[in-house]
Length: 452
Image (cartoon, rainbow, N blue to C red; front, side, top):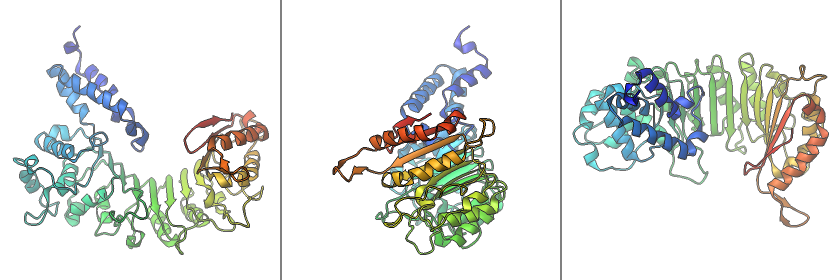
């Protein structure tokens, strides 16, 4: 049998094996690690391109699968313009898009790229965008025009600096009323972690006049990640009722602002908070974050908490009785100071969620040895009489920062620090490991010691 004679169903399955989107369609979020190492995805994509040129029977199917994702490998603004043109001229291909990374095009492009098609598309969607022929630049409307034509999009990423601003180009009232945006969109990630001294970016406006005004148009949205938002624009409750996973990063929220966001959700299952400026007077502390998350303790299953601001006592973690997975940074629960360089060995016992199955600790190298006894005691407190009774199964310890040996005045590598403490842990928490528990320890360079 020749390749040309294969059934369309078989051809489709072969093409799906070469599609990065299909490989991770089960994930809640597109895997950044999978796309960041572009070698394999590019090889697979080239194979799909080659198959699309094989013959007509393969070409039509391979073309559809090629359009399952866009933007993760195509970084040039010109590619985004050409993609917009392709789906504008071929609606069947537009319907194939499932994963997209879109960018706000701020620079002027060669005007010949827009000749013969852009005006027709701008006119077709004029009621949903704010394009003004006298003052607007067509490049800034390419991303909105793509979104208006891809009804089956499931994951949207707009994580470049100021990429969120293409949402400003929508006519929000008409958008919310007529719902032309992808109705099956499940997850959206906007914003970027930026340097404090970078003045060329704009924090995300979460008000009804900004990005917050677009959210109601995504009626089936379940996961949202927002980086570098302007917390002062959280004046009205965001439409988060259907959100199952909520992530805020590179942000300084007050307890009131955080409470408003959490209460706006319904069946919240996953939550992440990565603080930016702990010196802000109203910055929410680790204790306050867990107190607020207790409002959703019946549904919450996973949390990442890096508040960078601790109080004198941390107790609220135990309120999250259904939490199964936790990632937490040391300064969320430990207020390090010159007078408090060693955490009391009982400090971590009974303060974290009682039914955790996995916990990850992120610890700055200078403070690891000051926390080690408390960490060992916490691990031992989670040892049951038998493997069947033991709830906590996995502990991940990440050591970060640049380590120095103060006595020798010589660099002390994180790998040495990690290896020395791995040996100590191996000796001291043998009971946990005998019950089937696993402990992994990482240094910042991501070298791994498997303790168990």
